[in-house]
Amino acid sequence: MENTHQSVNFLKEISNLLVRSPSCSCVLSDVLELITDFWQAEEVTIVIKSKQGEFLPIAGVTGKTPQYMLSLPKTIFLSTMEGQAEKISCKKVKGKLLLSDEGNYYLIFIPLWTSNKIIGIFALLTEKKNIDAELDLTILEVITNQIGFSLEKEFYKEKTDSSEMRFDSIINSLNEGIIMLQDKVVYCNSKAFELLRMNNSYANKEIDQFCAHLVKISKNPSNTIIYLETFLLANSFYYFTIETRDNRFLKFSKFDVQNVSGETLCKGLLLSDVTEYKEKERFKDTLISILSHELKTPLTIINGNATSLLRTDIRWEEADRQEFLKEISEECHRLNDMVGELLAISLINAKKYQLHKRFITIGSFTDKVYRTISRAYAKQGNITFTVKNKDDVFEIDEQKVQQVIQNLIDNAVKYGPRHVKVNVYVKREGDRVLFIIKDNGPGISKDALDKIFQQYYQVKPERTSINKGSGLGLSICKGIVEAHGGSIWAESTLGKGSDFCFTLPVNKVKVGDYFE
Image 1 (spheres, one colour):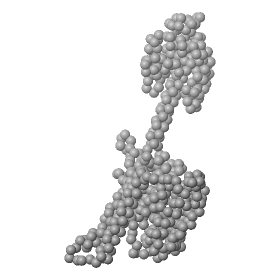
Image 2 (cartoon, one colour):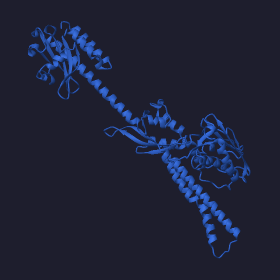
Image 3 (cartoon, rainbow, N blue to C red):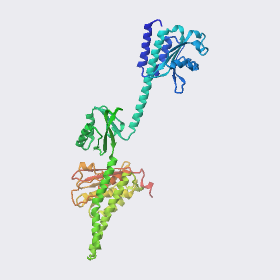
Image 4 (tube, rainbow, N blue to C red):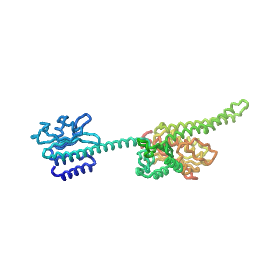
C-alpha cells in the first residue's frame, strides 16, 4: 500500500478488536469485513482443515469464496499447509472463480498457525493493483497469526472452562466434603459447606478463621483445638473426628495435594459424616453392655429361684414356691421387654418399623387405654384422663400408640414420688391430636431435656433403688410417633414436674362418617 502509516493504524485497529473481545469467533466476521474494505477485496475467508482432511469454512465475507474455495484443487493448498504464504494469479484456476478478467486478480493464501501447527488457511481474492507484494503479504501474515493465536486462546479457554465445570460437577456430587488449605481456604466443595454449616463467605478466609469455626461447632472445643494444631503440624497422613453441638460426628482425613514432581502444593481435608457409623458402633457397645449387665440380674434371679425349687433336700412351703415362681415370671417379662425394645429400636434405625393402622375415634381409643392403665397402676399413683373432641377420628396403630402413653406414664410412676399424680390431656389442635402426660415428679434439667429422646440416654434417678432400664424407651416412643407423621417433645422445670407431649395427625371426619 502507498501509506505505511495507514497500514500501521489498520494493524492496530485489527489488534484491538481481537485482543479486547472476549471471543474471537464473535468478532471474526467484523475483522474480515475490515480486511475486505482495506484491500478492496472480492472475497475473504478462513477455512479449517478437519481430521478427515476436508477444508471447512468458519468465516467469510460476501459468501462466495467458501463455495468456490472448496471447489479449487487441493494441490493448490499444499505449499500453504506446509507453512508457505502464497500469492498466485487467478489464471492458475481458470474458470473456477467466474471472474471476467482473471489475469488481473490475485489469490493470496496465508497459513493459519496455532502455537505449534497449521490448522487452516486464510484466503483473500483481490485485484493485483490493490496488493503491494512485500508489505501487504507481511501485514496479512501478522493478522493471520493474530487470528490463529486468538482462536487458540478461545479454544483453550472453552476447554479449560469445560474441564473446570466437569471437575466441579464431579467434586460437588461426592458425598464427602473436600477442603483445600494454604494460608487460606483455597477451595471447598458444596458438601463441605453443607456438613460444616458454613456459607460461601468462608472460601478465601484465613485458616485461623476456618479453625475457629470448627471449634465453635464442636461439642468438645479443647479436643478440637488439639486435633487442629496436630493437623497443621503433621507432615504425614492424619485423621480426627469431632462431635458437633447438633450431635453429628464428622471425620477429617488429611492428605497432601502434589504436582507431577511430587512437590506439595497445599494441604487437603477429606470430610465425612460418620454419624450413622458411630450410632451403629454405640448400638453394638450398648447391646454388649445390656447383654452383659442388664440381662445378668433377671437371669440370676431366674436361675437362683429355679435352682432352689429343684432342690430335693428342702421341702418348700406353697407360699414360698409361689413367690419363687412369681419372681421367675416377672423377670421373664422383664427379659421379654428388653428383647422387644432391642428389636424395636433395630427396626426403627433400619427404617423398617411397620404400623398396623385403623380408623378409630379419639374417645374409643382413650377409653381403652384408660381401662388398661388404671388397672395396671391402681396402687402406684393417681392417674386421670381428660379428653376433648371424642368424636374426631384418626388413623393409628392402637397398640403402638398405647405403648407410647404407657411408657410415658410408667416413667412418671417410676421416677416420681410415691403415689405420684399423672394427668393425661387429649384434645384436637388444628389438624393434630395433642396428647399431654403431665406429672408432679422431680422434673428434668435443661441439659438432660435436650438428650432424653436419644438412644441409650438415661436420666440419673433421685432414688437409687430404681432399676435402670435400657435407655431405649423414649427413643422407641419417638420412633412410633414419627412413624405416624407426628412429633414428640418434653417440657420440664426441676422440682415442678414434667410435661411429655406428642401429636398425631387427625382425619377431617367425624364419627358418623365411619361408624353408625
